[in-house]
Image (cartoon, rainbow, N blue to C red; front, side):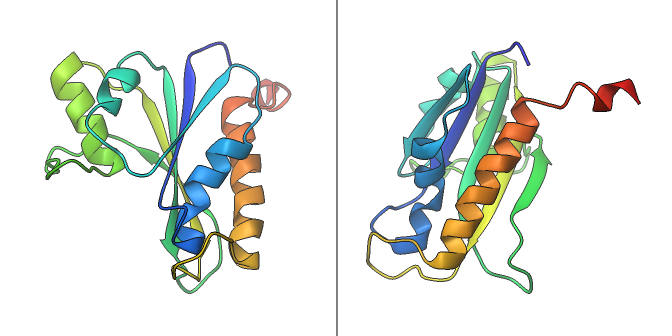
Length: 150
């Protein structure tokens, strides 16, 4: 894919599995992809998104019934307002749309975690999720050209 691609991994690295997003961003090594690791999504990121063709957000989530990494397409949320200095991906996309009259294509990858206590190590479940998230990002950014023939 020949476009401006950014991966934003966010979360608190001092809260064990909450640091999943940052770990993915810091571990990602895909050509022509810029990765950013941040503690939280802030309004200042809107300017970066305004100059991006594709953004992939990566964050930790609480384990639900399954331990599956969730990948979903995103669009700006018209009902979300950034309260204070933090945002979720949809409200950040909405802010980008409002300020710059543009919104990049966006994906949200949520990686399950089980330990959100103080600490700087990921649980085995989170480590597995990080590896899966890295594969998912590669699949989004570098689609298989053979599949487009069918």
